[in-house]
Length: 245
Ligand code: 13P
Image (cartoon, rainbow, N blue to C red; front, top):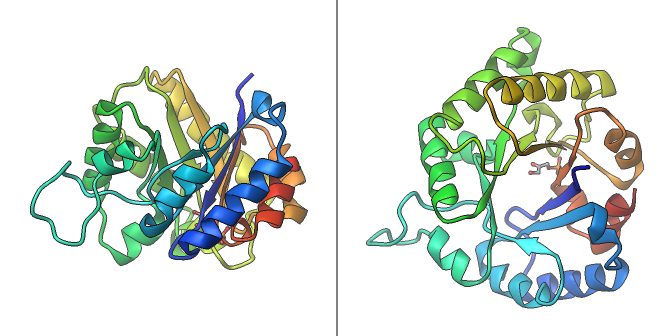
């Protein structure tokens, strides 16, 4: 049985101190038994990555950056490298979030490069895909998801673990959750594509307005292996409530 994954994406929020206290709360609330059937991922803003690294020590909490530069080092003022996140203990990395695609012009090709970089460093990529509202209204959801998947995964190692996060762009931060039917249908579509392409070890997370009060229902949908949580991951209490759903 696959472990469920509960992933917090703090986006551009949470200071070093706030990150420390969040980790303390999660540590206190989730017993070691919890981690037998689930994994907890935290994606802090880079200034707080070290705080989470420290707060997560001696726990099963995993953490990593929300975005990395495509090169490992060099003259790229202002950028952050996967290598330096690894030094802090990162074993996971968020790749291709829709906000990166939308506001920072990340292309499928760049996403593909970064996924390969993660694989080469034994880091598990959490690879985000999802359609916009206009694309859904034009019945292009499956087409868009398939394109993002096939381009992002071009030439990657299919035996290595891959975490896909399906986040419909229209459900992010809007309070509009995809319906159970919509979630099931896209997750099943992704599952069948991945299996058909020969991927043997992957999970599919749902993201988009996941909250404590809808988590229980969403987690019971077939092909949903966990969540990528934005707003509701900012308070330890609501994040813990989602984990316990
Ligand atoms: P919200 O949970 O705030 O909708 O954000 C989802 C998200 O983008 C997580 O990566």
